[in-house]
Amino acid sequence: MKTVLERLLDYVRFDTQSNESTGTHPSTPNQMVLARHLAEEMRAVGLQDVRLTEHGYAFGTLPATPGMEEAPALGFIAHLDTSDAASGTNVQPQVIPYRGGVIPLGTSGKFLDPKRFPSLNHQIGNTLVTTDGTTLLGADDKAGIAEIMTAAERIISEKIPHGPLRFGFTPDEEIGEGTLFFDVEAFGAQYAYTVDGGAAGEIEFQNFNAATATIAFHGIPVHPGSARGIMVNALRVAFEFNSMLPRNEVPEETEQFQGFYHLIRCSGTASEAETVYLLRDHDAESFEARKTTLRRIAAELNARYGNGTVTVAVKDQYRNMEEVILQHPFLLDIAKKAVHESGLEPVIVPIRGGTDGAMLSFRGLPCPNLGTGGYNFHGESEFASVEEMEKTVEILLGITVRFSRLAPGEPAQSLPVQKTEEISRI
Image (tube, rainbow, N blue to C red; front, side, top):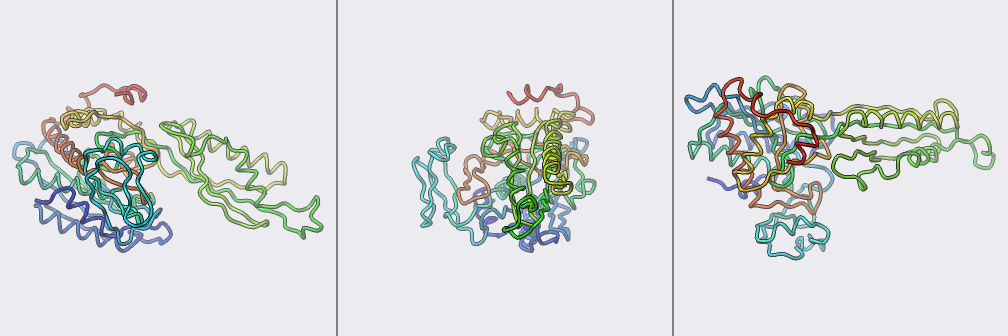
């Protein structure tokens, strides 16, 4: 039987970066290569009804232990693509027994320094998997895949009692398309957990409301020698627009439940310019207020420079799944008890980003997120803790066993709904 470490080292050798510009599904062909590999592995460990779809989704099932068929069907989900924020080609992982101090990342000249990454201080005595400093690692979310597959194999080999189980591995999560072709009905689970978070023992059910705002600036170009009173410089208006946003409401100065405006692109000339912002906020009213702020600033600039100088186009991306999960709070109760049983303390943390689970929750599959033991995602400083990955496997097994004990209709009664701030302190 493979260990969770062996699986992670196997999966990270696949270059599966997604790419939002291709317009294909999956967005890159190598994702299908890993999906095919996972389908073969699911069959090898004994999962049934293994399916590989044309869009790069790999699914498998495990029928219930006799006598437990009436338990709610439970799913575990992870994504197989990686971010394009750093190279994912020819990943060369380092496996390091960590005794403290600075970790050199290969011969790249880069380091993991606990002064910059204080999470390392909690890893002394653990075995870490790092990069060589030239690529990302891919623990986001190949650690989650490794944990789910290891749990599945243990359930089968150790004959762990379980209800109906469903397993799913999705492409293109990093570009927001991970659920685009996810057939919830065919998946067949009533509830699920994504395994795509940070530290082992973390439980997430609150994510950002998210939108993308594209701001277009239309200038009046004339020769600079005769520009007085005539020229409108589109780039200067774009800079002015940005200066009118709340200065501290940016990713680098916010945390926890604080929202932000994130400028991700700026291009153009004096004639035409464009900026693109990510709008993020956990609170729905504050989220809508951010859109209003953009439109107010545009109106002020149009009044100053002429109608049509600034146009705002906002595209909603996903919503905070909290409103769905709090209708099924037993999911949090079961996860917390499984974390306790693994020897860790459960920590409820907000997701400062998105998740497949958010979209799936609004499509009828309530789906909180669990930690994986991975850190510093989307860059060369990414690493994973082997011991935390092993703990996550235990957590998945604990959730599986607890689900098998649920009777039809029982879950909704298992935990009273609590307010966000109350649950977040647990």
